[in-house]
Amino acid sequence: MRIDIALFTYDDIFSDFDIRDYRQRQLSKDFLDELRIRMLKKSDSTTTALVMMIEKSQRNEKYEKLIIKRLRAFFEERYASHLLKRKKNIAQAVISGLAGVVLLLAAYVLSTFVGTLFRDFLLIPSWYLVWSGLEKLIGNGQEIAKKLAYYRALSVATIEFRDKTVNA
Image (cartoon, rainbow, N blue to C red):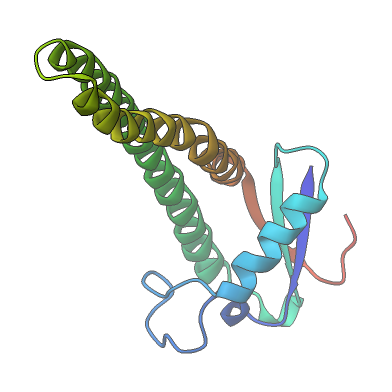
């Protein structure tokens, strides 16, 4: 799959409010939104090429190499960040679920000494912890998985610039 994006200048990729060098500038939200929309419209989730079309008179090979490096680093950083989020999400889900099970077992053990009122009181938080752990694992896990697939596809995609007048 190939995604073509037309640019007037290289500045279209970066935030208008950030005047730093291309190595440090923040990427434009509009550019990232357009990229996400184009990725969602494609039926195939594997991106093979991200092609940015720009007028030949506006092209600068030095800037292009810098921008490609910057984009690749951005996508790889986002991918690594979402991998970390997935690990944290799984850890939180497991801890929540285990805490609920431990609380449930403690309630049944203590109910033999104290009575059923104590057990009934502890059932509510124990079930809450179990179900919230499952929600984190399933609900949040699916959302994180989508973002991981998106940034993985972009981090391995070929990024290139081409003349706007040339149709390839």
